[in-house]
Length: 101
Image (cartoon, rainbow, N blue to C red):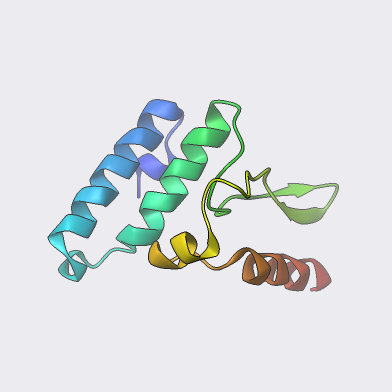
């Protein structure tokens, strides 16, 4: 999780590597490892100027939350569910709720 909040692409790749290892070790790791695999991939992609795949990264623009740019053709909602990430529809609903508060 620390590398996920690191300062650049190398840290995000390490976060993904360690999260994948935690997934291999199983649920006893006690971490949200499956989600972290996806989130680290998204952070890495954004850090190198590419759109995210899973939709785990949000940003605030002009006082409103929005999903960071996403390549919706890279993974399916089934892939998102496999990695413990909400569907795009659910993420967009969450953002709407965040912006209405």
